[in-house]
Image 1 (cartoon, rainbow, N blue to C red):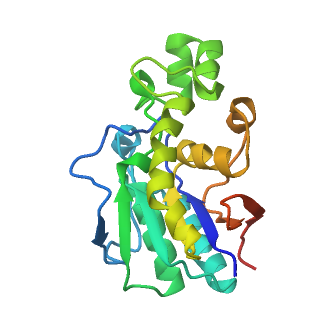
Image 2 (image 1 turned 135 degrees about the vertical axis):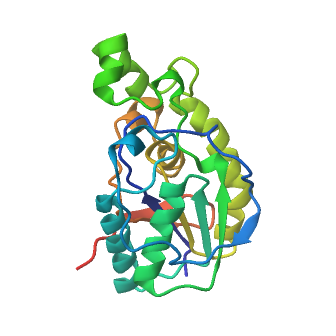
Image 3 (image 1 turned 30 degrees about the vertical axis):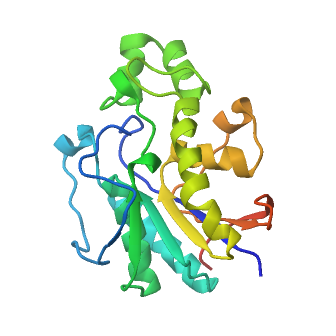
Length: 234
């Protein structure tokens, strides 16, 4: 039986909410993390729009529940669970776990999986950023592989922290036949997808990753990808 690697992208309010640096007290050590411990409904108000570590929107909560339903319907129960250290990622996993009926497990959070650090763009929506730096410059920062915004990371920089983490923490589990789930963010997941789908820098910047939709990679014994499938509930 082949191991599987599952990717789940979380959803949040703002394109430029980061970051790799906005974490305190995080580590790569596994820790017990009880599922289903916050309110069923999280109210969002305007001041939270610019919070550096935003929580899920109502849409994000619903997407996370649908992801859990899709995993349950396909009979997929991972052996190991990883998220970033940002709350929208580990809350995405938690709501998915509620839908799957799983409460007794250990989740590993790692800041290495955090969203790309947007530097001076952090806390701005795209219109604010375009007004300050111009549409062309913002497009370059968002879509280039190796050009970082002021004070921030490029996608290449993000990959340089994500991929060594993957090789150290996830690849060995896959080699033993375990199924692994990672709940993270658009750019940290792009770094992993770049490796698994053997994409170059130009191709990966144009790779769209839907929020709240598990992507299942069937992994060969040599670590290469045999198949890719997006899971959606019936």
